[in-house]
Length: 111
Length: 113
Image (cartoon, rainbow over all chains, first blue to last red; front, side, top):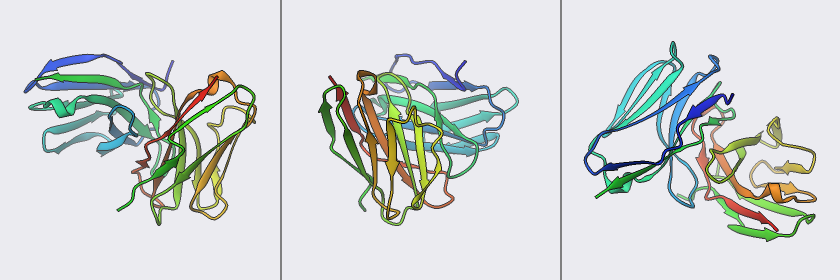
């Protein structure tokens, strides 16, 4: 069993829809929870970051962490075609340490 | 400002050959990470440098893989006796000393024929 599980998709939704992306994990020692976005043939870029449990909102993006269920989510409101990318959930045990990534979900927003 | 740069962007080699992949981190970043990403998968950790020393090399798959960072800035990932299974995107990231954020470069796509 992988430490971090993520549905690879692909996921296709119409422009303006709310998108929900999720990951589960097995190791309760994870403290930092992140979502990275990766466009084709580019390196990942950090989108959202949460320390421990809770919610965090940034514009159209909301990240949620439920440590009791070992479950994290990313919500995208008013989705745009420019949001089409692969979204990677990611976790680490501490700051400045290796990141464990999910396999990524390919998202396509249809105009 | 300048981000993380990696050279070459693409490398094609033959099975059994030796390759070197270079990473130039963001100026002033003391932490440097190497990851490998296969098609359809997330990046997998290889090695982490803090300054010149390897703080965690637990992700290196075998002794054919080696990485150095002699002056605490540029790093080179070295792969000996390449195998077809080494074909992947090799990503480098850098960060500040105790920061959680890692800034990724565009990667080097390695193809072993």
